[in-house]
Amino acid sequence: MKSAFHSIVLLTLVVNAFLCGCSTPTTGNSAESSQEQDTTSKPVTEAKSIVVEESGIYTSKDSVAAYLCKFDKLPQNYVDKSEGQKLYESSTGNTFSKWNFNPWKTIGVMIGGDNFDNYASDPDYYHSSLPEGKYHEADVDYGNVQSRGTKRLVYQTGCIIYYTADHYETFKLLNPGNR
Image (tube, rainbow, N blue to C red; front, side):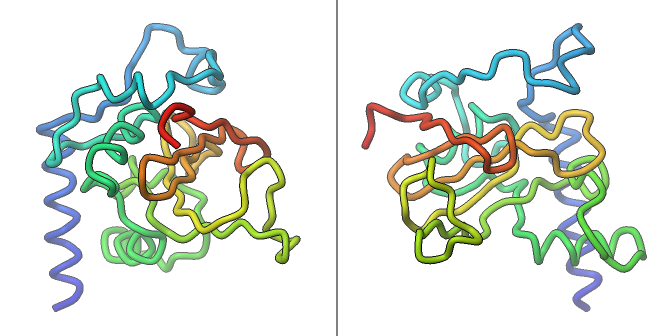
């Protein structure tokens, strides 16, 4: 029964992705797929002008940030790591061992919504360039990478969103005017 449910969820996500497309912009420059050309980001205050619908499928940094600000949740094409692992196993028949695949290409979902705590009292997981607190994380801009890549949004309710292109080494506040 659980397998049938996961198959239906997966099929629904794949059909939605096919019919709606994703919002990640494409360009004719193939060098862009392996490296981000413009490491600056529009503040979310500007990104709010991006039109997002609650039923939409979004994968890019700016569109997911705009969605988070407008709806205070991730788009429907996001699942947490646990659900992503279950979908991987049910759709491929393989046992999950690690994130060495691109979830968007392999199972039609983006990974996000898991907790991301940042406290100095836990030095193994503390990032000094990010203010202390409880956050959630979301993958963005998978592009043509073979795995989940390094680009993440780290966010709190109220449109407080940080972007990291280097897997938590540095963070950029995307919404400086909305604190």
